[in-house]
Length: 326
Ligand code: ADP
Ligand code: MG
Image (cartoon, rainbow, N blue to C red; front, side):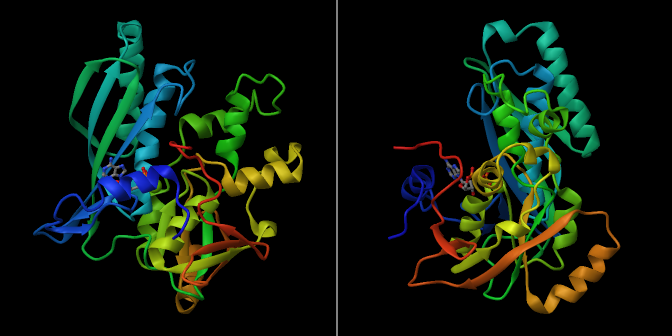
């Protein structure tokens, strides 16, 4: 048996096989579900919940909470190669936040991100209680073109978008820790509250990638999901990890740990089959994406997926943020 985080074990035990799955193309276990439809596209649906003091600090502004909530959800759509179209907002508000000023800032921020991504708010629910923002996104992907976690094969090359470790560095700066080198880093704060969903990259990857995930829990943890879903292992090299120069103010061991296991990066991690590499490179050279090759997919070892870092094996359950740590 493979070690797994308690959160995923809970989902697998109680929910994964709870219902029949008619007309479900991709069900529980990927970044979003894919549902069959009669037209040329499939529907794609994802939900994410953000809870005060868990997913954002209690000091966060209404504007910041709204942008983070919508952007992290859009990141799951990007990971499927899908384009979001509609969303539903379930808002739980404590009475002190239900002021006109707070709601105006929250709704304006939500509206401006929605306009940027051309998505429409079509419903929701409003209740009183501890501040919790739950968003369900509905999007579309051409039939058979969704990017899933399960398609990686030995020999495929592993890539990530952007830079890694920014989410963890931002959190370090946000913690009640005035000593942090990142306390006033505006780039990192912006990244935390308004991560850039990699929608255009995800869309482009439909023609090239064999597997894709967004990095929300940390590279090792999320690449581990790709490995388990695909029945493969992975080898990555820390030398190749893209780390922003800002992060290099702290010891290398620290920023590498953030890049490997810190969460909240909302970049894409994807695999490209060797025989598509040239076409992918040619396509990429005409685009404006920042993408870095960090390793290779390898065969599974003794029926157990591993992510090897600089040659050392690490259980894929290590690293990443776990909601139900025992
Ligand atoms: P992500 O980090 O990409 O948002 P999660 O780790 O939240 O994904 O969830 C992993 C998978 O489990 C997803 O497919 C998600 O839809 C599913 N899932 C999470 N919680 C539940 C639940 N309570 N019931 C059914 N499916 C769930
Ligand atoms: Mg995801």
